[in-house]
Length: 112
Image (tube, rainbow, N blue to C red; front, side):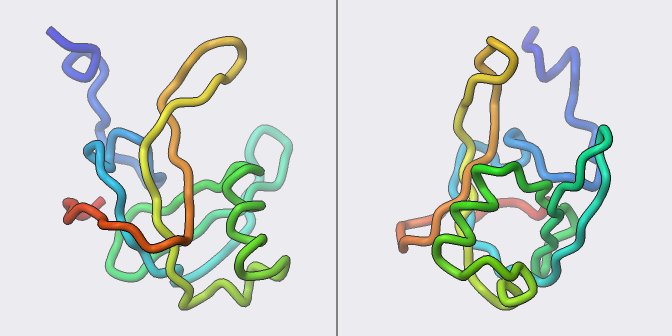
């Protein structure tokens, strides 16, 4: 039995690394908003033709802003690529999502 069987990703509004099925996906930013989470403001991105949204961490927000500028409202209509990887969080290696802009062969993924 796998961890995913024990703790299935049962959906939700936010995109998770497991939703990407191990592949890179090209997405077009449809909207941006700010949500409060644990007392901090976080940037939330929505995408054309996708149900789930990406809750941006500082790393992903800075990666996007380095290409498209600091005003997130100007990101609407812009392309990004999301891919699953791992990172260290609170001393543990965990799955995460990272973004990039350079062109690269991307997988055809399921809707999320």
